Image (cartoon, rainbow, N blue to C red; front, side, top):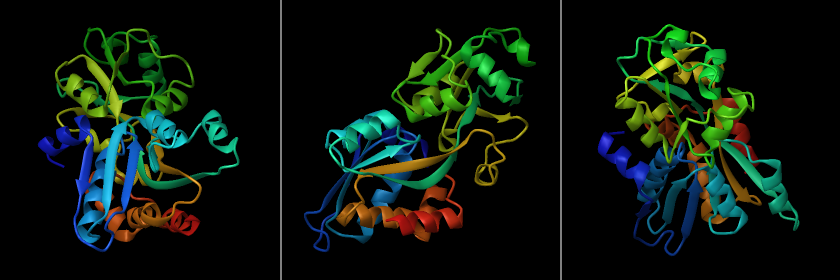
Length: 282
């Protein structure tokens, strides 16, 4: 995806409207994960080009924001880069409603560094040390004698929560870690500071160096086979099984064509057994 389109997607709410008769009057709202924003935006544009009259509005804000939106009924689908929390499920299920979860793609959380940074490989233990504040100088991990400048996502982000759980092992982030409102903001900050480090989705890594983790580079192959250590599933949530346009759209995302669109947008498709299982669950 080109830089101009990336900036538009990252910093604006994006809505595509197609005119016609086949799905006239049908509208679907999707909100949540900034990690998923590019993929779902591309899927929505493709779906509407083929289904005249359908209206699909896609916005970001973070996984927590999207999940809160389906809880309060202000969106039809929540995009999330982390599983829904127990306390979030309880809010939905207390009145007898059911949570529907479906995996729609895979992603590898990439570690972004400035292209001039000589460090090219970090262990998960080193990453934990950097982000909890136990490692504060690049020379401690084989780099230059310079203070590490840490960038993170904001705490409403599913990427923030996933990274904290799986890399920091639930320890707190360092107090000087700078939380950014979106992955594009993290990439932009790191690209301008040779001593910076940040993290985010695989599809956003433009203009920065991506480090190996435990000797493995993030790629569609290493994420798909699980050898990249910071891999994850990306989800969509609805209250109850999706119906109408929501079901049609998720069917499209999980179709072979939809998964090819995900690849073009920089994401990792689901393994075939997982894709078929997701389709069967609808």
